[in-house]
Length: 126
Image (tube, rainbow, N blue to C red; front, side, top):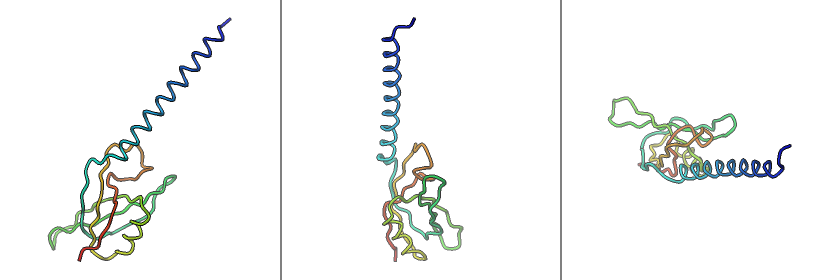
């Protein structure tokens, strides 16, 4: 016959281990989403902005950066979380804009965005 206290100890150990794993994962996720690897601005024309995803819907866009007239444009993929920034981007379609972004490395899933670049502000460039 097994000791009932051994079962209780085993259950507490298992519950404590699971709780520790959840706390470590939550701390990692918080750190990755709140710490910027890089930040900056990119200028160009927004080619595309759409809400995508099966379960987690995120705004994904593409900025065409034109460096020298007559050359091919470089594409800059980005993600937007703030609805006010999405509205500002939609209002500036067809105009040259400057996007302010933060780069987050190590985000574990696509639920937070398909790219590493998270746009935080937009302004029209004259």
